[in-house]
Amino acid sequence: MHTDYSNDQAPPLTIEQRFERLIARVFLSGKPTLESARRHEKQIRDFASGGLALFWQRQGIYFGAALLCGFYYSITIAVLCYLLCQVADAFDSFVSLKVVKRTDRSLRHTRRLLGLLFFSNLFSSLAVATFTLLVADLEGPAEHFTSLFFLFAAGLFAAVNNHQLPQVLAVRLIIYGALFIYIPARDIWNESPYYGSQMWLHFATAIFVLYFVLECSMIFLRLYQRGLDQLDELRTERDRAREAYEVKSQFVSVVSHELRTPLTSINGALGLLRDSDLSNNPESAARMLDIAHKNSQRLSKLINDLLDIQKMESSKMTYDFAPLDLTELINEAAHSIAPYAEKYDVSVCLTGDSDALHVSADRERLMQVLDNLLSNAVKFSSAGGEVHLSARAEDDFAILEVRDFGVGIPKDSEHLVFGKFTQVDGSDKRNHDGTGLGLSIVRQIVTDHDAHIDYESQPGQGTLFYVEFPLLRRPS
Image (tube, rainbow, N blue to C red; front, side, top):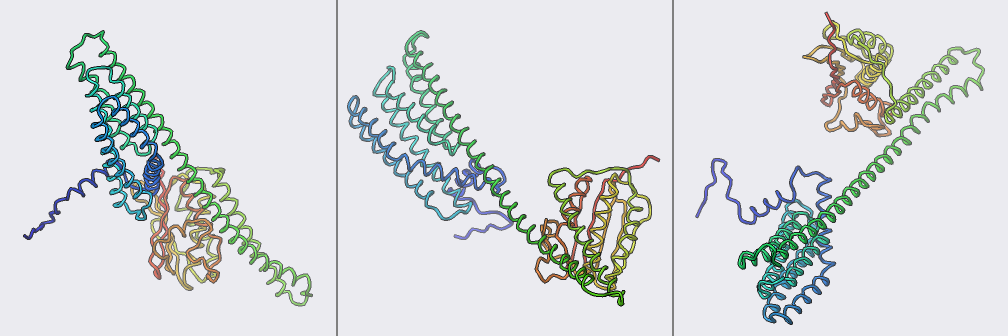
């Protein structure tokens, strides 16, 4: 028989698939994340390993309960219920072993194991409940001390040992709690005693004991959840420590490289000036001084970048916000960067509107942003190329744009572009020097101005960096 599921009609779900979806909604609610996946993984494993560790304790409890039932009530009921509990416990242990020894960590397999755990614990709970109810029937309309004590022990055992999976614990407590109320309530229904009788006292006592079991369950559940929270915090701190170690390693590598190169040039130039008679060759002396001066400036910029990063990380960066004309500022930045651009045979062109665009900003820090963006654009442009600088208004924002037509940036490189001590080309043979701090500092300054920075790029066609500032409306 052929079934056609045309017109985008999905095939009907099997019983197994429906069950898996139900379990996923109950246990894995919310958007799955790495942290939640780790948490679920630990909860499932703790639950299963804890169940295996308590195997012989459960055997002792089942044997003791069967022995009491067989000696005082019915050997037949005792044997049948003991065998039922053994089957349930064997299935429970089998599922727990599958969880502990599993190698497949996929979400689908996790759902399946959760479903098996849920079903096995439901089966064992019903086995215990059946045993208890049959003992209560054998006791007749009496105090039900034995049956209710069996239920109390089962509920307390679940509270202490099944708190890793709250949904499973809830199922056990619902079954045990319903039976805890049902047994004395059935006697009251059948016998209709007056309110001062022992049956009503037993009913009230059962409710009190049930409340105690529920409170114990919540205490153990909260303790376990607190332990999970502390574990997550420790894992987060560990990850932060690893990140800090990586940043430290990058810092040592970059700083040692960036310091060694200019210091070598400075030492070489000063050594030549000291050891040579340059009075007859003033041009050579001037060239040596120029090399030393440029490398001193390079060292100064590195130190300033490091100080800025330290201030930002310790939240000590200060700003002097004031109304600022962005159009005027980019004109100043274009003239300031011109000598640097000439060295690369690159021209900086002002484009866009010339109208005043007022924003609330720190002039010095915003000039630092423009200097970094323009110097990067110049460095990565081809000789004879252009860098376009513009500012324009769009809705309630002032858009600052720096566009070059150079090498461009590969896709999925944002973590390198804005990272600390990182560069898109981080090899020792890269063509452009740098510490990898400039754009990280730029993004932090922009963020502190309640603005947003991003870029668009095509490898081989250039890059556009743009910053969106909230536009300051000047009173007319």
